[in-house]
Image (tube, chains in turn brown, orange):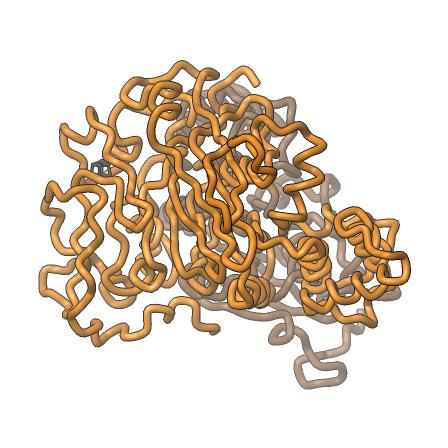
Length: 230
Length: 410
Ligand code: SF4
């Protein structure tokens, strides 16, 4: 279970992007978060993946409240998440080959020995040929790079996947392919999913249910807003 | 630029685009559609070449005509043999032709004729970009100058393109804003003060300043919210309806369906299908297996990917470039390049799909049959590649009388 409780977050404490947002995702559940750009849904995705510290509120990952964020999150919590963002070029090191990018989390967690075989396995799952793995980001298309980013997100076999506009830059066929990879992975592992996006057709087809930030935000003083008294 | 991945090639692209029409050029990323778009503006990177001609007829019936078959394409690119990475491709010789004097390209004494490849940068900047072809950019944020107001950027563009008397500058800029439905009371805003939608309109206003008869929109909806996609699509449509020729280069099939009169599907640097948009998105549906696969990938249809990935443009297989991914491929497909579609329409395929039956046949398999006109069993039929699908004389399928259903707002 991934629980987000009364999350208030943003980049300026005086003007938070999110105010009192709550969302529960059951194990193995796929939830689509719909909304226009700039509404704060990406911020919520980052909070959920322990990449952004909320101003207030709580994230509980499989029963354990999160206490640290980004590199300060305990390793077992950090590695419970695989995250894919909208722009693969902003989330890959231009100096690394695709193979090295995919293996990055393995190396960072001291599983260097596994890296070769696991990378090959992941590359096949996401449809990257061995030839593409030897290239650097500028030598591949956005779609190919995003496949590598998805492989990287799956490298540590996360229990939760957070896909923030993963396919917004991609064509329909690549979109269907990447969603297929995510769903295959979830079938095999029972991982849960938070997919953030603006494409209603896509998220409704992909996810078990879709929500909007408004539907997750308790009105001030309303019944869903037990004031955080701690 | 040492690998095939960097080689951009467009070969034998042929289509007509008339005034008042919108043609959508669709395909997966890397298929060459952006190369074609750049070629029309003379903005090809140094390593890219494309074959053929692109003529723009200016005046009341502005027309873009791109023809790319023949000499250059075949000799340059050797379509039946795999090309070594880095040596691919072709040349595009776009020309401009006055509709009153349809003269041969480069005819002496005809000032309207311009070979974009031969033209120097200054000529392109002076005569083509903004004047004949207005560019609606992919990212308005990157296209607008952050430190200057919209008005100042519009006025500068007016000054460059139109050289009006000083007192007309303001009016001309405001008129351009009006044509793009950009609100006059936001003209003194800086780009960062604009919403995504207004930034897109500001960019459109800049594209419209020179009153170019042709608008070229290069992935104008990438990364935009669906609402904004729809609004951008509708504005492009409006400009087509007001008499411009609009070329929409996009991977967004929903935007294409909403905007276009005609669809050109590009694969591996070639146009593989040209079709009336209603036929394509509705009944009888696409004829080329790749085009059908693209449509089937939509979440509103089968949501099924096309297996495999597109070939490198620098190392195309012999025969049909789609053959390695095509479930209809035969031996012929791997050896013989199918003929490109005629400018009037058709599919570059040895075994095109039959037009979808007007009544749902029991043979139509798959989960796509509800929303997608699925073709009947793949019977290879050696139809000439240029053949138009038979006019859909039968009644429209009762399940989907409106071919635009997929674009309906949720
Ligand atoms: S020519 Fe052959 S391989 Fe190519 S699309 Fe047609 S059937 Fe498929």
